[in-house]
Length: 259
Image (cartoon, rainbow, N blue to C red; front, side):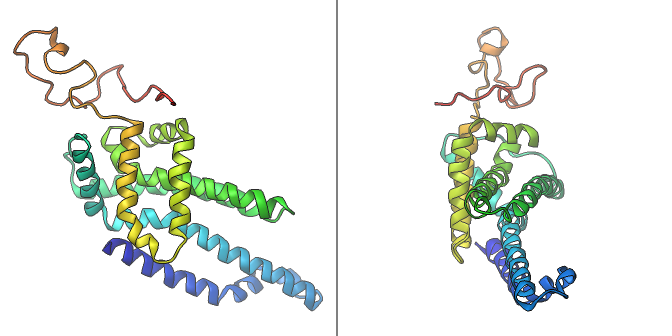
């Protein structure tokens, strides 16, 4: 829980600063309202200040998981591996340096955050629409946050399965009800102060189980086990790396059965 505590402390400090200076930020962003009547000027600036705080909160929700996972990468990766082992085994640990793992994780996190930020900007602007902005848009924002939160949490176990980020996102879309059910629930939970720190290990474990559901790992390979991949010759050695990519074969390229 220490990585989550470190990240939480930083985010709380940033949000407190944003709330304290939200009025000044709104005044700076609306110089065109200086000549308006006091009533309308204050109304516009209150809306801008609230929108700024809301956008900051949404950004915090979207980025908190990525930052926490980066800070606690070794711990959470070990936790994910233990869950895999408990459930029957998972892919072998990648034989790459820690710095490269962190670089890949950071790159993928930035890509996810850019996608989420693009949706967030559109939803932020839609929030000014009468009625829809106060009813439909918050629900859509919750779903977007849940989807990308799930993408972030399942990144490590799915990456171990040799899946690039585009393929991982496609898998999540193929099981959208499950993805949103997992992600939106966590998003709402993460909005409760303090619960984020307590829930993060469970979220990582749950995301690992979700990854196993999306892309099951078969230690014996897709050909049915030792010997069968070598024409059934008795005594044939099992594939030393059954999870390596084979030309033209991608067991995860087929949409999982929805059922």
